[in-house]
Image (cartoon, rainbow, N blue to C red; front, side, top):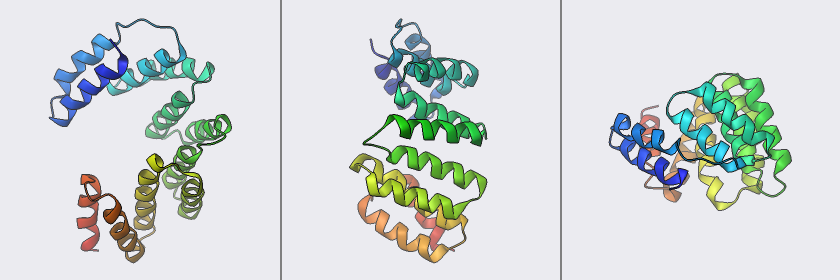
Length: 186
């Protein structure tokens, strides 16, 4: 009876390449009623997973208006996927203003915006700032994105070195394993 349970089931179906079957659970989740800020956030995520970005934005904007920081991050992600870098950047900056302690995800988002704009030196600065304040749960994504930046800068030697360190920390990361194979041939 929680949004998260429905999303978890959907994601299990996605992992088995059965997202169409899983989408039925997302539709069921939308039947849950709630008017709290987290409810708007969860519905926004669900609409995004269903491919309805307009409805996702509408729900997330309501959650943002109610000062729900996770919604700010997710809305930034949607704007970034829509290549609306200005609004994405604004969301990540707003998130950082809302968070006094855990700003690492905001820095990561700003780095992704810089990557999208081809400003790799600024992206690296954002990653470093993020790593300085990151909690353990945020370090992995920052380190991975750092590797991506070096690849985009065509600095494959540094990317390989960073990847070797990353793989020691996160040997089970399937995406990184594939990326590591790619780097070995560069």
